[in-house]
Every structure is written in C-alpha cells, then in structure tokens.
Length: 116
Length: 108
Image (cartoon, rainbow over all chains, first blue to last red; front, side, top):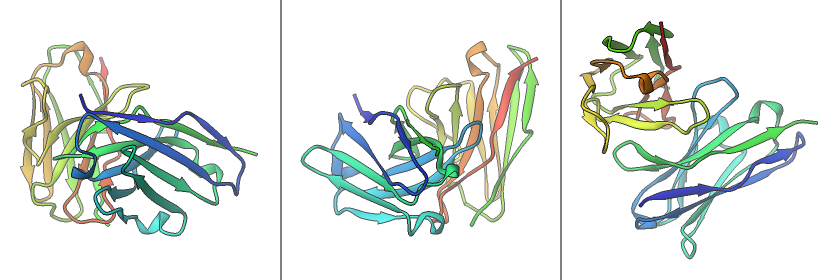
C-alpha cells in the first residue's frame, strides 16, 4: 500500500535550519507531486510548497520563497524539505502529502519545535 | 490569494443527526475543491475531491456539492467517529494552495 514515512521530531534554536524527510513506497515515486503542509499548535493547515519528483521542479508560496528548499532522491524515493532562518512561529507539525486527485495519502507528520 | 471561509466554526450535533458544513471562496474555484477530516493527533484524511467525488474508502454518508464560490459537505447521519475537524481546500488558482480555517463537529 502507499505509504509516506516521515523523519522524527526536531528541536531547533531560532536562526537555525531544519531538514525533514518523507520516504515514499507502494507507488511510482515520479508519478505524483508531493506537497508539504504544516499545522501550528491548535491551528489550521498551511501549504508550504510542492515538488514534482520526476524532474525536481518546485513551487513555493511567496511567504516561504526565500527560506524553503525541497529536493528529492529518486534512488530512495524520498523527498526532503529544508526550512532556514527558523523562528518561533515555525513551530508546527509538518506533513508531506501525495497529490492524486486531492492529497490522498499523508505522512504521519514531524513535529518541529523552535525555541531558545 | 484565494481565501476560504468555513462556517460554522463549531457545529454541535448528536449522533444520527445531519451535518451541513459550508465553505465559501473569495473567487471562483470551479469545482477544484477538496474536503479533509482531521482527528486529534492524526494527519488529515481526504474525504471529497473535485467538490463532489468521494475518495477511496469514504462512506456514502459523506457527500460534497457546489461549484464556483459556494460548497457544502454533508454528513447524512453522524456516527461517533465523525466528530472531528473538517477543512476545505482549493487547488484552482495557485500558488498558493489554500485551506479554510476549519469547522469542528462536536458532540452535543
């Protein structure tokens, strides 16, 4: 079955960077866009950006344009998201999600805590 | 950026009752709207895509309707496991992809 398995929780200081991973299995890795969505504690969902694993092309919202980088490794069917210049407002659960007529499969989420 | 407004913020109902959740978009999104359910401590789950198509494995009591700027998610008869937060999401005009603020369905 299709699975997205994300890396473990992270604690970072303000100004640092964090790199999260999302390992996929059970489908053709290059066939679907993969998105990152975050959720601050007690808040709603916010789109962080997307990557097309076939060619590595990315699209980011303007809000994160200068701080986020998404990459992929086709040999391991894994996508990565790096967020730099972290601030307390970046504290959230970060989810990866496969795009197939909606975000049909989600990872379990990675908690990122930014605190001094 | 397309803004999605969900109402009500909270819906207090009893099991067996009908739930009607609304999502209004700031400009037309055609039918490129999805609904997700999220329970505490879990990732969101896709319920409806393209406004009215049930995702794989979603029970028939969930239905979606609407086009343009006004959309509805209906749960025909609430089961205990349906009490959760529901989000709408547009994928018509992006970036950015945007989500509504959510409707919490709670047990009355």
